[in-house]
Length: 159
Image (cartoon, rainbow, N blue to C red; front, side, top):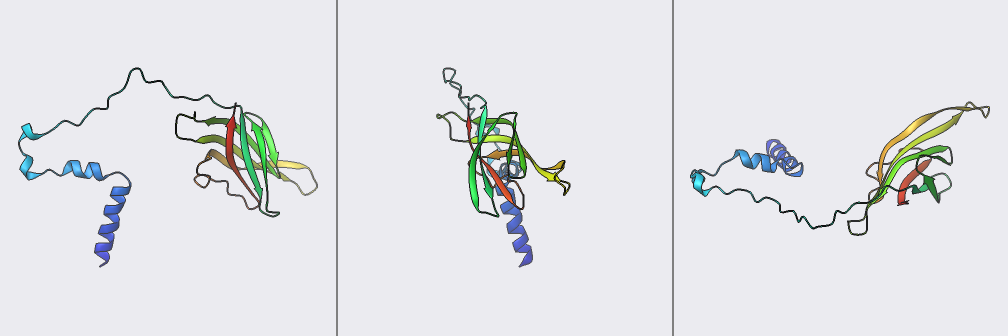
């Protein structure tokens, strides 16, 4: 029973991670030994007159912050390249982009978030880098900030 379970999970992992085409290529149908029966895979056809869909990087990222202690949220703007503060966090957004309306909607930004600390007497100590990476508006849980008091996620990117 455990062997069947292991085999089933291994096959499903191959299918999920896209190894099925590689697995299928290694196996041949014994009735198709004739090379004349083999067909070439169709090549994608590109339209040379199709407009290129691109977007420009934004200059302001709109973020939403949650204070877990007070259960309050606040939307705030973070200009690209400048540091903004939310509670005890220092947030820098080096890059953000929003897809054009012709493409599937998506907003993504690269964020660097530091937890500002004091030495107990009010003197600013060196902060700890809590997050550095991409955040996506369509799926904030994909790459989330892990902080005991605050949550921050991307809402929009404006020019």
